[in-house]
Length: 257
Image (cartoon, rainbow, N blue to C red; front, side):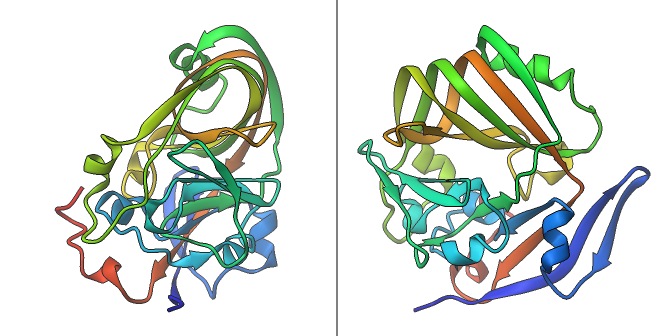
């Protein structure tokens, strides 16, 4: 059964003096040019084990051409690059998703980088992110980040399709299968979110990987860059689509993590 989506009727705009909530009618063409971070559901529900798909890829495409998330039943990881959606599965296979495939949670934007920085390694993920942080405003800002080039290593993982009753993500993550992709070329698709967004997104950097040959991908646990271009876009606002019905309303989202 197709699941509906209810627009929460709010756009959160990040202002220099703080934050404000602005009432809105929904996503319009103007949202594309305003660099909005769009959420299908939110991370708190996903952490609690809400894995049923709530929105199809064709709807995600209306809100962005760049992003990441999960797939229906948490059957692998979702990555969107240049308007194409991919699922990386626990068995190591990659599948291009059709317009009717669904996601329980995703974050998207129309990626229009404002600047690009070249990095030469080797630099571990910890070293690189600390260096990149020094290039960014340390305040409560949201960034879309694309890292494209050659990697000495990328450790990326995926989980098997889950069956009901769904377990919290913390339990499922223990069973993820990670692969170390050495000497590979590809793209890390991700976002850097401030601490106040912890119920919506992962705080700090969150990346999914997609190799240039489209044979490898997944949720990134660690990486070592070799020679990459890092493109950055600040996102001054975000929106959330809330499921209209289903398990989202049956889970205790306050106590389940």
